[in-house]
Image (cartoon, rainbow, N blue to C red):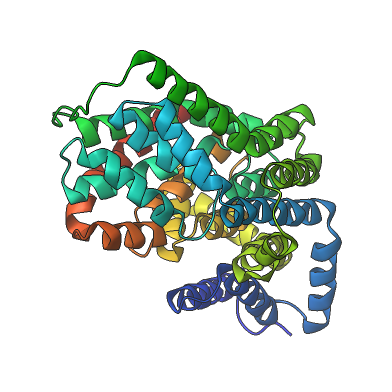
Length: 415
């Protein structure tokens, strides 16, 4: 029994999602609850178990869920074994320039989407930017901005994998169009953070032999600590992760190899090895991957995209507005790029053609919308660590946001 009109029901379910996220309910639980609530409002109730079952056995959904679980497990093991600390410390030894170190270290730790990752990089950024005489708000900006520059081109990003799967566009095609945007994000961040910063304070000179020994030791430690991530990325590319129908399984197989390499390096005890399996965030993010597919399938069954298509055509709404404003707004209000993409795709399905250009613009819009939301946990953690006001940090984040957004539009129109 259909209770209300599909479009109205979709809006109501979105409001429910926002309320749950506002109450700090896990995004995986929130997405699935909203999808089920939408199904109860717009579908015949006896058809709901069938949609849940068909989603649970959908090969692509299963592949992406497994990939998400594998990536989260690898990330948590990096943290629990302490290899992430070795990775960041060795990078600091290799790179002697404090400006480069303070921008590279957050990105390196950003390779692992662990909860509280911004707090892991904050002390490292603090020690390096102190040498440059940066104010607390600029230190916070460096930690936030450079931590997130890697995600639009990182093949192990759960949101990127999910975007590719939901839209049917090869992940490598999306990444290729994001490279110019990320390059400008890095340049913009570097100019805003370090323009006219004081010269680095020099310490005492070390003998050349001792300095070379330290460099060689740091390089060796870095290569060892980075090898699980490197092995995972190499295998993803080697197995042809760009083939969307197999992307999730390829990523899952690659993360299994990465975990094996990490275990061989760290030789953790059984207690440390199983500790991540008791952490709720692993299952929460994995559940969010399933929720994204369930929400899409419910929305498609309810005909949401056809309704939006008719509305867009009659209202003469420009495609660019749909590809930018909708995902950016959803990423902002939900405080989650995965939610922004998961909701945008069923809305735009049938309204726009999902090509590498359109999907790249949709993804970066959702990502940038999420990046600047005040409830962003990385932002809140960083501001609390550096004891600065959010308003002062936004003086640097907002110009960076607009430059990145303009770059994404230019890539869409020109490339």
